[in-house]
Image (cartoon, rainbow, N blue to C red; front, side):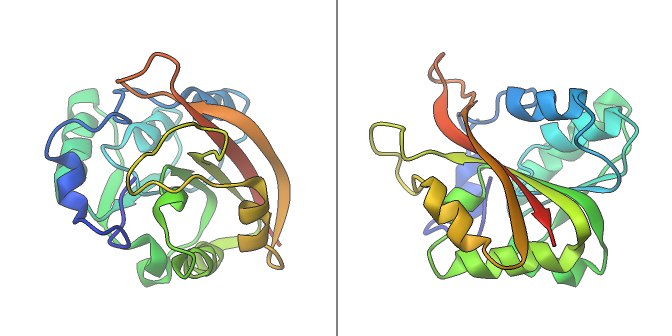
Length: 199
């Protein structure tokens, strides 16, 4: 859930446990995995401490997580070791995914898209496109404009902003109301779960 696009360094987000680091997968992504929607080679963009990568690895999928917060990546590697799971965690800017030299069938994004500036959003969409083959899927959980209050560097996202960012090279399959669980509020955060297919 980090990017150098944010005004503070990504390491600052993990100086203490951030509220989105709930120690388990987000329910929306767990439901997708249970339904078999997450398949093939999986990339988690902005993986944080790795719960979604490890969820995929536990399903026998080839899963990679990228983030700019080294502290989060070290925590993710520790979890993988403790759980006896095989997964890779790489220090990589999600706006430059082509630098990985790899392609994926599924990309997960929990809480990364909503910190990008207007200028970075199309750059990120192009970066995603560069590592997904036609027909591959992108699943994204982001803060919704329906969420009350201010949340610092996090930008509330409208459905129209999602469809506008991914217009042209993507099919927007659905944008539905969802929740991001956090440790500081039992009701969680109002979110959008977007499902897109690379065309």
